Image (tube, rainbow, N blue to C red):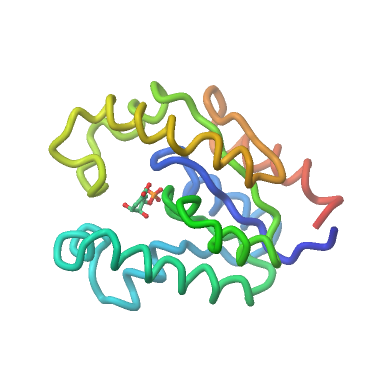
Length: 172
Ligand code: S3P
């Protein structure tokens, strides 16, 4: 297969950043995060970008970043949970990346995000319900686009990163 990057997809709060950083260390790859690239370019938090310009604007930036990072190599790329909303994002990411879905139950996601107030899509709403609804809309997309799926529920990021590395080292 000979892919140059590892791309982590999955719902908000499934551990893409924590697992991704650990995995990058294990593979001796650089770690990058599409949300961080957007925040740096705009000099604003994701929250602010949603607040001031709205989701559509954010999605346009996200598309540009997917195109840009598909030219990188030897990176673990953590993506925003909504990356699967647009197929062109995945088409770009797949050009050079092995796509890994970090799958979690809504209960686990809620557990991880119950005190979080940085995710615009989960703000001022019944968090658990939104997580269930959005996950229902997206889970099949994550599954459809993934080359490999890892269930993250009962494992530490440390153990998961090791497991992922062992699984993918022969195909990178
Ligand atoms: C989003 C997920 C967030 C961020 C933005 C939108 C989504 O990233 O991109 O708030 O639509 O699921 P994380 O998955 O890293 O939280």
